[in-house]
Length: 317
View 1: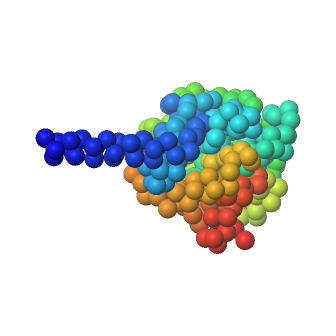
View 2: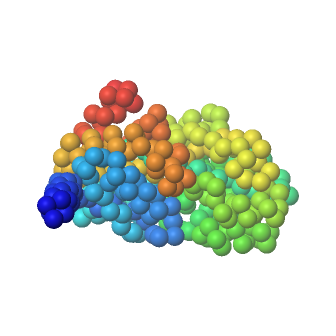
C-alpha cells in the first residue's frame, strides 16, 4: 500500500512539473497561408519544432490565413506573433508601397526561409531562347495585380519588353498551364517554389525551354530591387531540365512585431537554425532553410533578438 501511495505521489509530482513546465512556455501564434499552399504545412512543421526543441521556452501554434499581405497586417497589429511572408511583399508593406496604403513599420525580420523562383518558360516551337524573344508573343504574366505580375513588370523593362510589345495574358497558375498545353499561349512566368506541379505536368506532355535570367541584366535588376536574389532552379527539377537554370528568386521569410521581447526572438532564431533537419523531416521545404542564407533578400530591419544570433554566427556584421 505504501509503495502504491509513493508511486501515485511520484506520478502526481511529474504531472505537476510537466504542467508548470508547459505553463512557463511562451505561447505564440504563427500566421501562415491557405491550407492548400506551402506556408500552412511548413508553418506547422516550424511551429512543432520550435515547441518541441526549445526546452519548454516556446509553444507555437500555426494558423491558416490569406498569406503574405494579410500576414503583414496581422503582425503589424500584434494579432499574431510570427508570420511567413514573401520578402517583396514585406518590402512594400514596410515602406508603404503599393498595394499598401500606409507603412507597416512595426514588422521585423527573423530570417529568410526558402526561395520562390522566377520560372520563365516557353514552348519549344515558339523559338524563344531569351526573355527579349517574347516580343510579339502571348505571355501569361499571372493574375492581374498579383505578386507574380508585379515581378513581370519589374524585370520586363530591362529586356525591352512591356505590355505594348507583348500580348500579356492575365491568368492564375492552373489556367495558365491549361492554356499553355493547348498551345494558346507562347510562354509564361511563374514566381513559385520548386517543384511546381503545374510545370511538372507540362513537362511530361511537351518539350519546353526554361529561359535563363543571368548576366548583366540580372545584376541591374537586383541592384534596383534588392529583395530579388540571383539564384538557379536546380538541375533535374523538371523533366528534360538537366542543367541548373539561372534565374532570380524572391524569398519566403519569417517575421515578428518589433515589440516581441529580444530573448523570445533570439530563442526562436536559435531553435530554428539548430533544428532545421527536424523541420526538413516534417516538410521538404525545410531542407532549403540554411543559416548561410538567412539574410538573403531581407530588406526590412531584423529584430534585435534575431540579429544577435545571426551576428554570433557571422551571418550579419
